[in-house]
Image 1 (cartoon, rainbow, N blue to C red):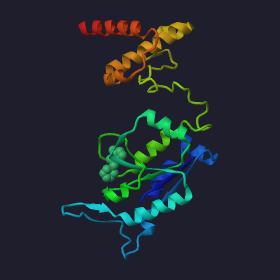
Image 2: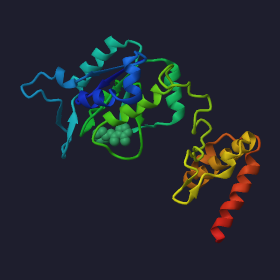
Image 3: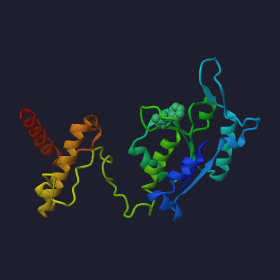
Image 4: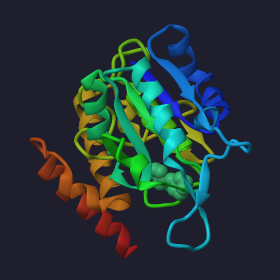
Length: 249
Ligand code: 4GS
C-alpha cells in the first residue's frame, strides 16, 4: 500500500517512518511512504504557501494553489488513492474505519496542514476528513502518521503474526485485559494466581471479566457499543458485585 503525505515537513514523516516496525516494513517493500512538499509548487519570491484570511482577523490560511498542485502530483503517483485530510473537523478515527481502510487496499494521500487552517477549497479535494481526537495540534503530520501506523498493522507481513480477526481490544469495543510477565512478585504485587494455574478455560474467563472491568472502570461509554458474548452477563454481574464491594471498604 502506498502512503503519500502532502506536507511542509517531509523530514518529520521520513524520520517517523524509518524506525521500528514501520521502518522494517518499508525496507521489506510491504508499504511505501512518499512526501510531496507544497512549497515546491510556490511561485513567488518568498515561496509562500499561506496568506492572510479573507474577511479579516489574525492568522494565516494555507493557499489552495500549492496544495492543489501537490495533490495533482500525488494522484499521478497513485491514481486509485483516497485523499484524506487531517483536521479536527473530521470524523473521529476509530478502529472500524482503520480496518475498513486497510481492507479497501486503496493507496492513501494525506493532506497535512501546519500551524494554520486549510483554505476550504483544499478540503474539497479530500474524499474523507479524519480527526485523531478533540484537541488541537500544530500540524496534521502526527495525526496522518497515526492513521498510517494503525492501518499498517493490518497489511500482510507487517506484524510478526497476522492480527487476529477479533484484534486485541476494540474489535468488540472492549479494552484489553491486564497482562503480566515474570517476576511473579514485584514490589509486593503478585501476578494473579489463575494466570499461573494452567487452566485455560479459567484464564479465558478471567481475561474476559477483567476486560469488562477495565472498560467499565475506565471507558464506560464503550460498553454501549460492545458485542456481548455468551457468558458475558454472568461475568459482568460478578465484576459489578466485586467493584461495589471494593467501594464499601
Ligand atoms: C488534528 C486533529 C489537528 C489543527 C493542524 C490546527 C494545524 C491541527 N488533525 N486530528 N492547524 N486533532 N490539526 O489538531 O487531526
